[in-house]
Length: 251
Image (cartoon, rainbow, N blue to C red):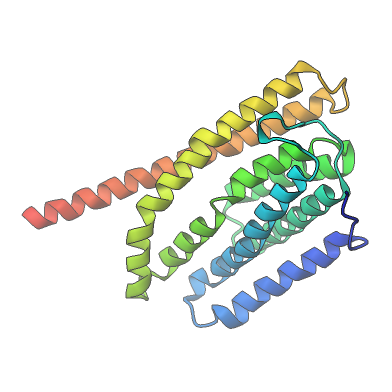
């Protein structure tokens, strides 16, 4: 049974929701934080309110129409509930894109990432109207690490001003890096490979045009590649930090 669209149109409503979350973080929750990290922490708060709901709703919307995880129909028409989940994510990425463009315009990589993500989400939702199972499956893998990542990020911002945050960061870092590495470095590429095989086989008889699925795959592979490079950099920094501490012990 399909779940009807609850809002018409939903994106302005969802966008107002994320604006509220951002304002709540900036002016209330993080008002006493260092000005340098106040806006970034508010962005993390938005991410928390997007990631977990998007993860749960994506899983539910996929299994609403699919019988088994091993045989997902990546080219099936979008259901209205799947479209609603896509719109929720579109609203988040629009708001977070605005955050970066206004507050951190020098972070070109994140701006490009958000623009590319919005391209995939919006073409799937408004242009092709098929393939939500594949795109939401990718969203699940992207957001399954979000709670851990944002907790780690907030602790990193606060470590100088809070001994507890520094301890949380020290404990969480290797756990988060390992978790992120498995999801983005192993599960993500395997899932994308499976999607690519299905799209390339032409089983949808052209319902999803070649330009669309190829561009989706390119964007997703680029995102995964950058994620792997990012976590590799974090592993290197952690190793250097541990090595420095060991040298200090014996000096």
